[in-house]
View 1 (spheres, rainbow, N blue to C red):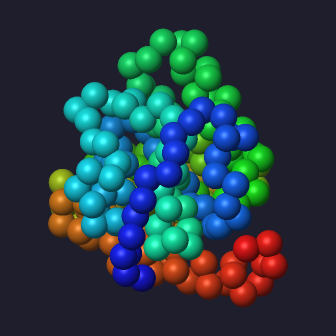
View 2: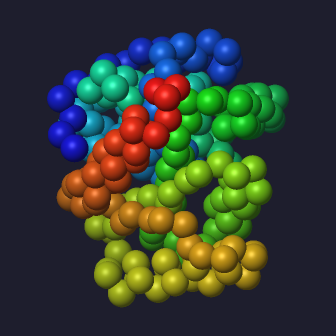
Length: 206
């Protein structure tokens, strides 16, 4: 897939105020400071489509971007470790779960994980929530340029082991990416393109 247009549409904290267009949506979410904004900018060929910041937890709203006029990229707040008040964080969690559990246009979520670190409980717990809620998702491992191929393989193996220990039957589909080196860009976009084709062909709502 080639991205020709990427347009910011709306930011809000209420799922009811999300765009009414019935287009497939792909939500991007991960721990604070996982490199989400850089990844989104890399995928869309925009330097500043998603705002990058040295301060984790900068994204505090549901952000919709219309891509090629036929699908939405949704930038969601990070979970965990953001330097915000407990009250704000509880609101985050509420509208994040509201979005995942009620948004009919959501086709697939991408859970971003920093490949530099070994399996983190907060990521395993979040993916368990996604699995238990039957929300389709893939994993995007970020910052692959920061460590060796051997370490990448060992960290992915550690995630597989921990997920199997948490009763997963198989590892979710995953991608290894680097926003700096544009690694994994084609793989992620081609996956979205393939899913879109299936969605438009098989679902009369879209």
